[in-house]
Length: 493
Ligand code: JE8
Image 1 (spheres, protein in one colour):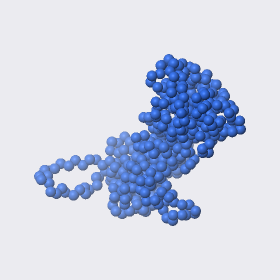
Image 2 (cartoon, helix red, strand yellow):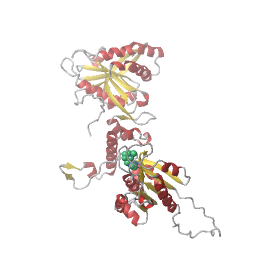
Image 3 (cartoon, rainbow, N blue to C red):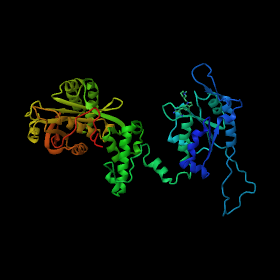
Image 4 (tube, rainbow, N blue to C red):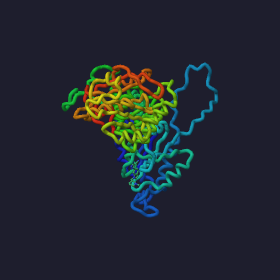
């Protein structure tokens, strides 16, 4: 590959003699030429700038000087590199006597660093590494007269790309040139000693930040190298590194998490992301979901969510009108107004996606005194711990079912109950009734620490349902308080 850099500070690019790029040049893999723009001036003062039309502070680089320099550099780069192809041997039939070879025109890209350019990315570096010639035009002062990019952009033989390193202000394009040359050069065949690192970069952790790395000594400044890395267990090392990459990305680059391809996320990935408050809905990309206490203004949205999700949780034989009646008797906006207004009796937790949509909620009924038994006698006989709270509803939008949102809601529910007081004591147990036929629900409650203690009768209109009663001991483990962004394992890494 041929790269030409045009600058009024050629010494700025001396660093490209060093390290990998320097070696690539010496090995003939990269033909890098740095030119002093002032070589194309003709006046005694070697002037490259002038005052801006329209007024304003500073100076602008003249298009005529740039035009001459770029024409020269593009002309010498348009001559295709001499073919290094070896003649084919061992063919069954001879090559045609007068073979007509059409050499494709070389791909020439003019790169103009500017704070108003498109962001320079790894994807762009990969694309640029396929070009034949890159010409980097490093501006200074207030930049280069805009007609330069316009003129070469109109030329069919050159691609023009105005690029920016990022949203901060530099004094000129030289640092961008250094960055671009280094990012492109390391992608050229033969430049990296070990091309495996390139493969790992593009496949191993695609779309994630890098995992942390360690070397000897095994203890430094009182800090130990994570044990898994010295275990020799390659599978565990790979999993740990991916976990670290996921957690680091979730903490520092939420934009990258939101852009992850859900097809590239396995179960373990989803568990790690859930621990950071990210959930993968069916057919969607990861979304941030936060668990918080319900607020008065949530009533209408909660009623809508309840009316939508309650029928989906009912057994198929239940009559539509019975389901509708249950909703109007228990799950209207007015009901939620009442639940949300009575914090002593009801605990409402919501799971809200970053775009403000409620994707799930729990409704827990608390006893008002320590010895208040569960409202139904059959349950009171099964659930003997006091005070006992009832997990009345845990509903999650279908797209988020299986995403881990329900688990986080349940953990937050238990954690919040553990720090409440009824008659001076925290609730000892959380119980729930769940339809016998719903195996999926039972499994998810079991995962959340509930165990089956018996059955109860449950009436929805005319149908008398048999429910399993499950209980979770709230005093088994100390849990954290519910924050605005509580996840089951948040803050444990
Ligand atoms: C530059 C630059 C990149 C980045 C690139 C080229 C040429 C109009 N402004 C010009 C006014 C303030 C000073 C600026 C100096 N300047 C800056 C960059 C860049 N690529 N990410 N930030 N800044 C030039 C002149």
